[in-house]
Length: 614
Ligand code: F6R
Image (tube, rainbow, N blue to C red; front, side, top):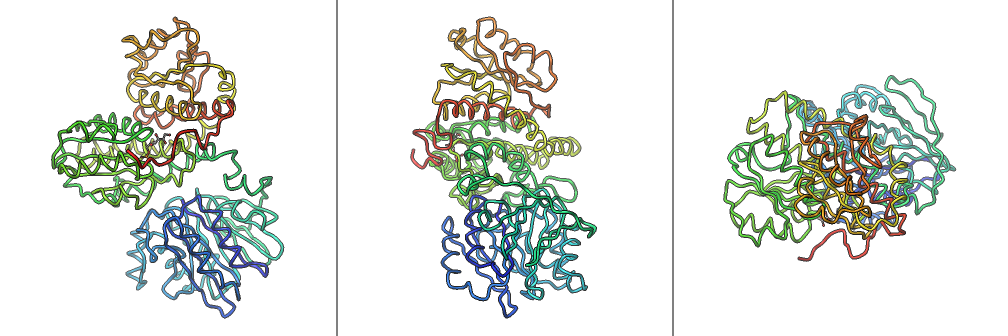
């Protein structure tokens, strides 16, 4: 998640470029920067690193520098490779300083390309994956290729999902951009042409917007935008019809951030998985800061977290225990440190926190460090307090989450934790390499399967609307269906303000079933896992007591489907990966019910996005 933009043409200005970047702030704000070709043919770079104020600082630094603008690139960074420093801020340059690049996404094979380029005499000044693109372009330009040809050839050598824009000061009015599985559009206005990560960045400045397809290359110049395929053949531009106003555009055209973030889950999960397998097909978590030898010495794991993060941790407990045979204890952060937990140097404590700033989890991690344990944090925010303090860190790459109710960071957390579980199994040799790679390949199918689940949005909305007036909801599931039930209930409570409880389905008969009557709605998580038959029996027990039944079931599972008053179908996957899919219809249900009740889904009452009090 980063934001990129470029502009050229007689009406183009540095102010517009920086303003466009500000509208891309939601894509990340670890740092911001621009590179501008001046009338004298030089490429000038201005970069700002000031945490959340980076874009403001950039606006100040560029305020009086509009004169002589020919064309330029801009970037707002959400760091993935390389710490948040000025050297790592974009744009990145080649050795000559004449070629500039802004990039969004990950170059998975950057290490191998970097070492090849270094052998060829290129000197790198950052720790980013992006910089290899600038040097690759330099190498191809030196061979006599045009910038368009250099971009095309470079793209064929880069692995991973990404988009980038390049500029060459020796042909100052032209920008060349490309993309693969990452957003990129072009726009044209009076005397100005743009390329950008998304429409909001240039809304009100461009009159027409066009799509760029995967592996296509677009040449943006003062006389127009021209699109080419990977073989250099011209492709017709296809126009996007845009009816948003500026405010709607900040939410990417969605009604609110929560729905935007629910629908961003395919890319949140994909980005979290990308770049974590090396050339040998092994899981490589280089950024983690704990070496394999240390991980082999671990004999017990604790997972701590709050709310939604705790639920992601619960899914991980099942996976880690099953795949590594290491015992895993799970704790709510605010309970952990007051219960005198038994841990030592051979214990690994995993803190799960979207923000990395939740006080309860920070305190739990501190307690773990004090007792001598190794600590690892799974966080969505680079350089967060927890990420800085822990021995090891594994980042989710969901991009900034604005809606208070966590959605995309939850599925990204589960994905990251599952990768971690497989990595532990690999390091400790508790699974065959073939088994690990089979599961990892299935994980890569999740984004597509999430897309499929999201197509049920309208049907789920209808079910939600039919339940306005229901006073009590229960969510039941077993095994990894249990954390899904808890998360489904939490989402509903948070934004609908209605009583909603999650239970392990087998536990109902020990008490909670006394509450079941015809006023109750029970959600059953009955996707096909080892305990499907038992969960179905538990669903039957509440059905015969008059409850209305909504089931999250696998597509085409007629046996399950026959038992529900309403069905949310999801594709089948590996049983331990199922929570990533199963939770999504429940997020959508909570969202639509809350909207039907007239609630503010982005800012639910009494809640804060980051809880920094105990
Ligand atoms: C639920 C929600 C909260 C957070 C919890 C932990 O939608 O957002 O339950 O999950 O406050 O926050 P982080 O993950 O930032 O530690």
